Length: 474
RNA sequence: GGCGGCAUAGCCAAGAGGCUAAGGCGAGGGUCUGCAAAACCCUUAUUCCCGGGUUCGAAUCCCGGUGCCGCCUCCA
Image (cartoon, rainbow, N blue to C red; front, side, top):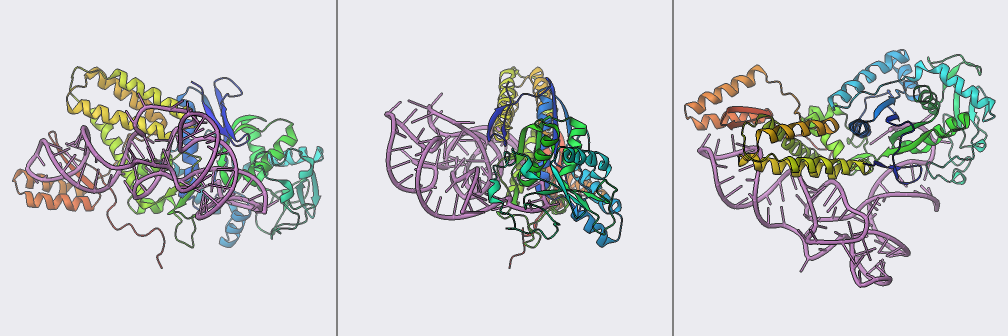
């Protein structure tokens, strides 16, 4: 089956063919570790996770690189203000980033190069550009002279003429010939961070790290480059200018960009209170798996509106999936139907959907159709043992891509276990009023009970009210 | 001002000229249950922002509106 991706470079769907058969090299722009990543950042990382998992599922050997920007204006400023070294300043943010990614079941990349550990590579790249006549030095800084790169603007479609020199003055800038030129190397700003270079002590410009590190880990041309839409201009445009001017080769063959996540119809904003980290949502009682579902369930090129209503819906949807998976796993019947045709069709439809530019909505729809059909068969005892085995194997396979079938483990505290036991006791005594009261109390604690022929079982429930407003209401 | 995107049921969201407009959530009714939960069954868009046009045929193509959103130098 052919995979097609929407390539920002051509603005159309293109058939995907890796450079090297069976192998895909992916560069994904990672976090700038000056603060905790928010759910919007994780929307992009979740998309990249889906991309990678799907390519693997299709049989490709995938190598993913995600940079960690641990030196830039913000990290330097933060470290200075906190009175600590750059490394000390960024460490907790890096640790939290990995922890949150794990919580959302985002698989690790193969490489997480840090900017601060690749200064020599960046200096080498700048020298290479210098030798090619693409740079100029001014007041201790080195700039990229965009007029030397004819292809500038091909990714973003930005009309160079619209970037009027002097129309916008950056407070942090030094002395550039043209407003659109950008810094490859910046002088030491009086802060703590600084490295020696042929142009004097200083630090790298932001864009150069991605050019240098992608080249090091993936080669001068690789298959897929991803990031959020905001990176299209100027970041990715500048990466292209740097890398392609240096190598004379295309940087990446497919550029995939994920749309932004907004909150309650508005851009995430700290001042509006519509700014959420993963921890914020978890603190409100939401299941990380529901958050994963929500992030994944909207097509990556469509803006995702995060709402509490949406989170509740995602909680219900993902519970349906995990409940179903458990039911199939535990199914002990052996009816006459092996169900093989339905399962095969569902798997094929799943693949067709994702082949089409990661069409997740259709893929999920086929899964829900399968869930309904299989539940019906199990209700009627029509599913055979062999069919059950095929179904489980298929679900496991699909879950390599989605990772949505296994519920977040629910650790019961001692108190909750006692409440459950007490309710069981009350039920046995047919004291239903007391049993129901206890069940309600547990629900308030986020534990939902189900009485089944095999005994009581429990699972995580939706967060108890109230969960607060998305932003401060005036 | 330049470039780009989106408008489909109460909410979310597929659909890229042609079988009865997916799926999820929610809501209502029913089966099951001590009651629930889960599951299953039924109902919930004669219609796809508005107005033209192309076509035998358009949610899907074209033109014109309206509304919302993103980017335009370091924000995923």
